[in-house]
Image 1 (tube, rainbow, N blue to C red):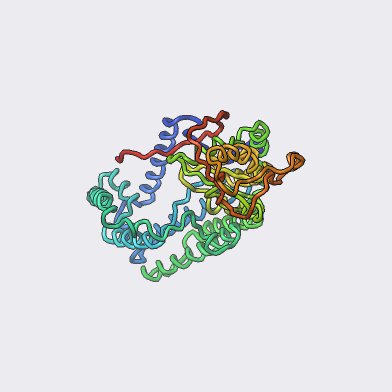
Image 2: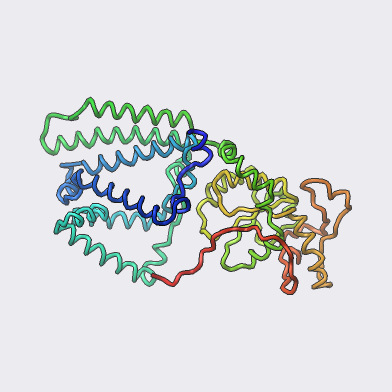
Length: 426
């Protein structure tokens, strides 16, 4: 079972595996179960929800925070065991100032109306009048905001974008340590809010069901400690789990794309092409393809996780080196971090120059600073440039940005990706 889970780490692509109908059915069942849980917990009553702001009933805080820390422990526990690929779990991007303002507005609405958006739908489902009124106002507010956002709020709405930004990124600590710390903090807060409840309500009997609560707290601390000790999987471990399937793609040359195919995607406005050059800095400064970014092999894993992980679906990553050896290592590191749509430039920079250098010279015989092929003895050496250059001009060579519209190239198309097209609204 463990080997199966590690070979296919979650989250499972339900829509791809079973189709949209099954995906929607699962979402419906989960939604109904969540709504039912809120209702039987009393969260369909505005008086109970609003009571937390008066410190007379902190059930909402305790239930929601408990749900958060239990889910957190399970998610990172599954990740530590290789059952879940955390990099594939969607994390809402952080827009700091809009998020803070939105949180304050929602908080005020929560106090006045007695509901949050989710609990208001529970009240609506049970035909409570205040729930119906709240949802009606919520709907009007959503449409009003949506219709005016571009004209009035666009700049602020899109400001302070930190992307996928978590507490681990903020504090720079291992995720296991963070999980354990949050669990301890949560348990202390649970004790504090129960103490406050009793003081506000004038009750002297504190910590009802003390034995059960202590047992639950002990279990949570124990599991969180195991998650901290186990730690999260390294990039190398992640690659080991997927090596059997991914290595076959390398060996069958499914991911090595021809220079001509790469050029087509560079010129394709529907695709955001990211060119990643992993050669040493001197070779990169000597010559590189236009718009390529220099990233060393030691940096590629971290950069993949922080920057490349959650890019638009129409992003194509192409890694390159002088030949293919270093680029293949970079490809493995990026795949281990769950980066999709990543390919290798076939035969690297040497392959690019072999394909386009003579054609650029033919199209513009007066073009200066053209690379010159070196001795054939270098053809058998890995990761060595097979061309000499007059100076370290980077992308200031004509072949770095070839414009060859009247030449047809023959190659086997290998890139398979979903292209995000502009919608017509709705």
